[in-house]
Image (cartoon, rainbow, N blue to C red; front, side, top):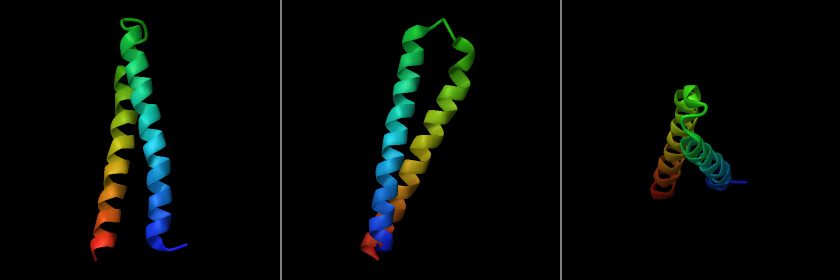
Length: 66
């Protein structure tokens, strides 16, 4: 498998992880004020997931245009 194909597969996994993190954040927001102490950890997980996804997409774009 080429580097680009491997990166595309990784992006697919990261996208699923980011969507899951987004849903966790959404679910938490609907339950507030219950579990309000989890806001920072759930938000950090969503932030990290989307940051990793964005970095992978930027890497793919750079490889495809190179």
